[in-house]
Image (cartoon, rainbow, N blue to C red; front, side, top):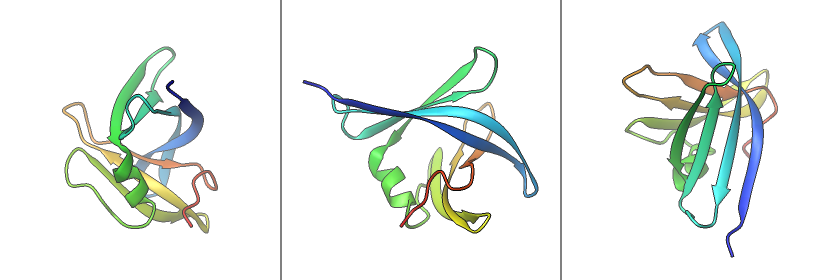
Length: 107
């Protein structure tokens, strides 16, 4: 039997060091694909962009910068709270995402 865990997040698309835009997103983990986390970014009225990350990449990124390819993850601070940033690289662009303050708090 497979188990799926999912959650909805309110991320910020980092536009500049002083500006960001809200973007809802979802994360999903399925035991049928135990080494992956699926992310869906809601970029428009009905448009979504989907990425699949290595589960270990996200876990390591809670504590130290990691990733050398299309996905990079690192811990940071936002409004005095710990957050995790995710930078993606694709032919369409290079967005950098961070959670709204307090959503992801690495310990």
